Image (cartoon, rainbow, N blue to C red; front, side, top):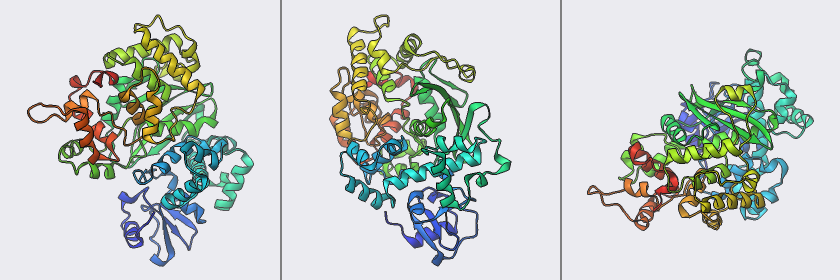
Length: 498
């Protein structure tokens, strides 16, 4: 990834927030790397190098600055649209692909060679896949040290380190001191007491929180999810362990996440899912600039700056929700999913989880595969579709975890009974986080693109018009959906397809 040194230096001289998350400055005289907005005195031009990612700076031998705290900078997907392979690889790394596996296995999931993957990472991120994964662990650990009162042993495992010894060695090597020395006494009681962690998750502004919350509220499964005031909460299960999260806006371009987990080793995976649901890796400025080139989208983008594509917490849950919603309204599908969860989901028992209004966890694929669904008010064919989806995920747990090209992923999903083009594109958009997924057969999208006389384009015409929106067609779809009045979009996702 090429960086113009003169432009980068002007950015750090002016402490330009537009570049926060886009570049990092390595200061040769101190050995630290900083964000562009670091409050320290600007170093001389001859004493700095510039890097596209924190991982590249650390791979070059620099350590994170203790003043500007690079771990709190927005993690932008600026490389998206340049290398889809890198985008998918980072999603898998964030979900823990290199915690138990190696680069060869990661490359295999992506359908590329190991050497090619390493080259792509070096070209676009300036660091190897292993360096990226290690930097993520270090920066998460550093955030936990600063912002929680967790013991160092728990910090080590919560950040994804395989052992306390490796954790201590990494920090000693990077900072020249043990990790405990980095803890600020004034902030030691900020979070972690009572088993509930509170973490700030930064994003690049703007962020249309009301639109994000409205989308999630309309589809919140009773007992599993809840939107109250300006917060979103949901129950969760990871490897058999139950917990919950609650997310709300915070000051300073960040979301505040309260996380209740019985096992802290699941924390990196939970953070990855929160980031996916709330689309925190998006670069709204770059996306808006691209979509605004189309005169039909320009006023929509101007009206809703910072609009995101809401992600899904779990692929199976989203697939079930989409299948249940075929031919019925959003409200009816939401209530039907709530009945399914209440009947077949595991009851929650944690007092903190129950206190925020969450009663059940969504049932896992093995539960649905063996369940009798005849008591639910839906056609038998739909019940069979749910059972088939559950069995498919049992046979291939990675079916909805990403890694494949968009066209291949959609084709694989369409082989499942009850999953058509619309549902496959919708799953790709929200679960696989494909920024270019686009359900061209969607009735609401065609309605939003109608000409002044009310004539709607055909699916083929809409798909042709959307070529100009690549690689951000999913965000174009979000703007078109949001442009319609609520009463006009209150049919469910599955029913929107012609």
